[in-house]
Length: 112
Image (tube, rainbow, N blue to C red; front, side, top):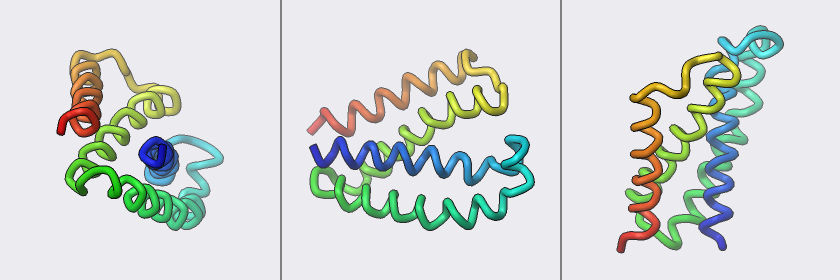
């Protein structure tokens, strides 16, 4: 249960991190307030990542946590970039990367 909550925290952190790092190119009102967004979201994102890492470390090694957070970040990046920036989602490269991220997460959780 704690691992699931940690994954939810990582997902929230990745979503906020996406807005924080891409706010300067999304459009108004984000574009004109990207510094404020970075200042507000920065501490929140850091705390979410730190707390989720501590929670997940109880059930898996740090290397596994790194791979899981990378994969979650990529899975978050795809729909947000498509929706807010209009970039193509269904390219062969994105589909294969999505499948690899799913495999990466599955390996970290289900292989011992």
